[in-house]
Image (cartoon, rainbow, N blue to C red; front, top):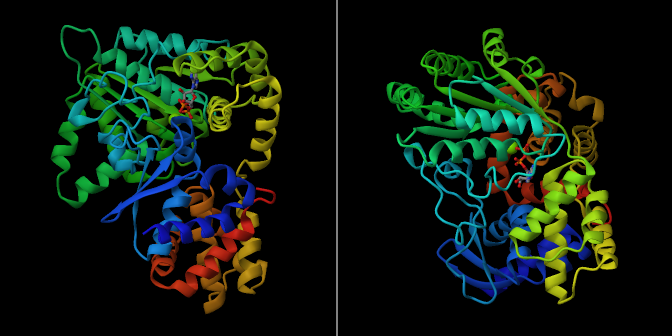
Length: 457
Ligand code: ADP
Ligand code: MG
């Protein structure tokens, strides 16, 4: 079975590029394959987290391609002590039931929410650094957590990617669940999962149960409501859920990367509801806050971070807290791999590599260009109304790749190609199936994907 890992490694070397392969994939060791579950070992916890966040999907896909069947992937640590503490990326459904935070094994078990949903144990108020950009949202979140249903209802938190919306939403959840005489019933979930649950309830003819479940709670925290854009049926159901909770003065917390009026295709009545409570924004953190976040993270992980290194890292990554954390994780992973301390020079070198390695996501235009190029069709035909077989197929491939490689939603991709979202979903399903059934076709698709990989990675 190690042969499988060798072949997979070769494949990954090709798709990720030599430098990235050497740093991140080569140190992984094959441990076992039991049934469809492959276990690999990473040299240490930071390394494992880094792989988890960036390369897990790529590794799993390559393994599955080599094996000719869909495999599951688990990462363990090389000392073997924590073999059971593997991390597996959860599917959105699982996310409802599992707390997959890396700290799970160490910290106390997070409190249970309604029907087994758990919050991320790391995302508490205590772990949240307050600075000028988030101070208002933080204060509002605290007020709501202390007096649910009384102060601001709904509380609508908005801000850019990686700025702490999900963190604050979880923190409210933790606070509502802790230290109260009467146990509150809280549901935390993302709007996407809300929609999935709704669809599955409709399919199984269990709508009464669905309604009942969401209406008998004390607080509903819905993350990423921008996802509701264009989803009419889900909006309608959520509208009723919202009204019944609101009428009972039960707390509703919403997060979004846009203000309500900028969420496209959102029903007017829902927009009005969203705007009817308090809207609190989170702006990117200033330098001092970024430094404080780095120190807090480092302390949490028992790492010593000198002030000059913290300042350097905070200056190099300015926009997004998630990336800030990623840089720290990388520094620590590399330092422990090489057995050296994190000096300023070391940090400079490591972060320079990071910036060149960073996986720049391709945009729709470059996907169209690469697809047209490799399938020998004209770029202009892709967006045309032509339906001859090669053009229609090329268009479906481009739609598939847009969904797979970018963060664009089905409706957004549809708009670009002048088609509606159901056409894009159909194309995506069709091409996915063909990729898994037809090896020659799969190779063509992989070739296009390779073309889209950033140079120098
Ligand atoms: P969003 O939901 O806005 O995209 P997240 O809440 O997922 O962002 O935050 C991204 C990461 O940054 C998380 O690991 C979170 O803990 C961390 N983070 C964001 N803001 C802060 C903060 N003010 N203090 C500490 N950690 C933060
Ligand atoms: Mg989020």
